[in-house]
Amino acid sequence: MTQQSAAALSEWSGREELAEAMIPLIGRLYRKNNVVTSVYGRKLINKSAVDILKAHRIARHNDGKELPLEETYPLLQAIAGLNLGAASVDIAKLTRKYKESGSGAEISDFLKAEFGDLVGAAGASEAQPRDVVLYGFGRIGRLLARILIERGGYGLRLRAIVVRKGSDDDLVKRASLLRRDSVHGPFDGSITVDEENSTIQANGTLIKVIYSSDPAAVDYTEHGINDAIVVDNTGRWRDREGLEQHLQAKGVSRVLLTAPGKGDVKNIVHGINHGDIVESDTIVSAASCTTNAITPVLKALNDEYGVVHGHVETVHSFTNDQNLIDNFHNGDRRGRSAALNMVITETGAAKAVAKALPEFAGKLTGNAIRVPTPDVSMAILNLNLEREATKEDVNTYLRQTSLNSPLHKQIDYIDSPEVVSTDFIGSRRAGIVDGLATIANGKNAVVYVWYDNEFGYSCQVIRVLEELAGTHPRAFPVLESELATA
Image (cartoon, rainbow, N blue to C red; front, side):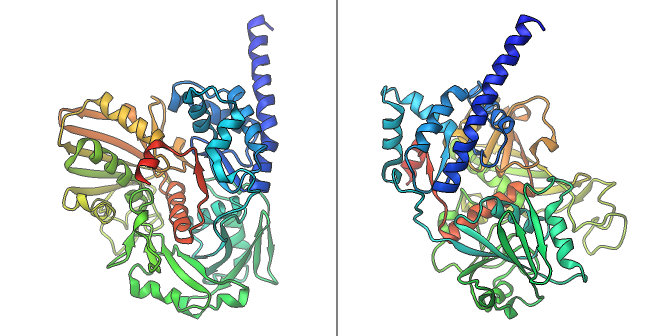
């Protein structure tokens, strides 16, 4: 082994040792204090040393350089000594804020000032846990279950799923679909099935499986479920009249639809109009995956450059609504094989943007092309702006928006020349701007936005769910832009 290669291996081993030392700190903070740690939105809970190293390396896309563990480890140590109350902490942003503060304060003093009254709160939360029921257990339902289970019951407690019984071994099959996923990989943990009591236990979360085809007929209180939020991911009912059936069931207080709502049902895109949710709203919609992907980017561009009008073209992965092979379908072209064809179809996402951002009413047209991939889609925003912009201007602005704005949970940014759709499977952001694909010429701009139309959307649904339940922990560090809009 050469001296150079030996040095490289030694450096890696040292960094790996630091990452390993971070794991018990991250775990104790989560289990003892309800503190969720992340690096630019990428959660560190239940991650390996290599996962932590990768998260620190990915930070170079945001800061232009890798995030040093030599800086984050002592910060994490100091946080662990504060016995905090419930919080969501981005250690990358917190590290940067500490370095940029220029005050020369000790880490402990800086953190005490940052966390304020949470210091010494010993895991206490301002919110009471809320029962959650998943009505339907399809693609989105199972991903919502994974996210809720991952959180260990903090804030939102997954208590039950409701489905129509499909076979004698229905419960085993449901558990198997939760355990294995061809797109998102295996479930991270342990799943056991109790057929006698009709329950699935996943990483300690006990889930009652209720069989019913009538939303109003279920008595959730019989299972100890009260004041629950029902997440309807069947898509069967999209108007107020249909969704109100859930409210007739005992133990239910609110309903969240994981599809575009019709009529007077509020369509909520978290990060954009979640502040429109009021206490009297018993039924809301989380809009569609495409609407969630494009609306934050459109708002950002409109705020900075002004959007006169535009066209949205989505290149969307096929869905269960299409046929696997050619067969009859009520919709135009959707009867043709999804696995073999690009299929032109309609999308309501362009019009739906205006439900969250009224200033876009009448400004957008849209269309969609379904393609033979199982997940991750792309939206191409072809926009006419009020003022001129260059590619560099647009990219610099969107990159900064992804880091330092209230939309940082919705918008991600990347400028790698080698990324393709599968690289974005599992992204927790609503949309990811591909900077290298941006085109800007005078007042015309074309922006490409990737989005995991399954998992990224599910994360947005969870954010809306937290708003309905009032259970989202306080996030740190607080951005200046968020202080200004508070």
